[in-house]
Image (tube, rainbow, N blue to C red; front, side, top):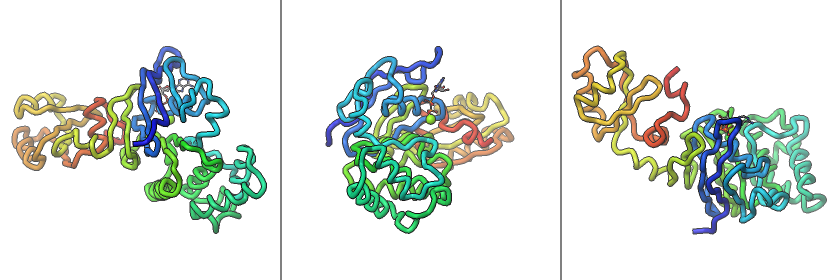
Length: 312
Ligand SMILES: Nc1ncnc2c1ncn2[C@@H]1O[C@H](COP(=O)(O)OP(=O)(O)O)[C@@H](O)[C@H]1O
Ligand SMILES: [Mg+2]
């Protein structure tokens, strides 16, 4: 186990009278790929801005590499690399020029900078695109340049806020392959936020947050083991369907987005029994192994992506 490198303690941050963070605490250990998973509006970007010193916490404390975010200022910024939700590349500059410009911002120049840029181009397989303007790159390649840019000064912590937003699944995989290679070659700690359960699977440790509060924290595998057996999801025309299932089979049910979910050791049998018990009331039924979405739903009582999960 490494040392603690990011710490948040009872963070609370309110916009108007709505808390974006509501007593959030967690610890990231050096070398972690620490994921923060929660639906839109749960406070991820607010937390992110606090960790990278763009916003001061109203209550509570946070530190990165032992430096308090409220007072660590420039020194703290030197220890972190940041990839924001919206890209920060200059589209008219080439890949190399973007990296060089960032190096200058970080106070690196001359030979050391050129050497570092070469190293990053090699590390991220970008050598053959070095002279292309970044506007000509695919979404996945742009993200790789963003990451290279963020780590030009060799930060100890790399922070990514919904960095794969807008990427298709293959570009997202490409981004994560690059991050994993980076982690093998460099002792960097990664902290990332996402509302996508598939992306959250990349975490070595994962924090689930809902309404600005921690819901659970563990490895993705162990979190999924909190949901036993199969998950069956019903869509029914009967608004009292969940109550009916409970009464008839004595099972716990969860409702959201027009669906009723049940955890059960033998899903296929349960589906057959339910169809028999409630003829004509079931519009659809599906069966799957527990996902992080199921875990989140079980623990937080809400879905990660409302409209998607509702099948809208
Ligand atoms: N600058 C702001 N002014 C007012 N409300 C904000 C501001 N930033 C975020 N919020 C609100 O705070 C909550 C958390 O937002 P945010 O941290 O962006 O969550 P996430 O990144 O998880 O979507 C949301 O309800 C959002 O509308
Ligand atoms: Mg956000």
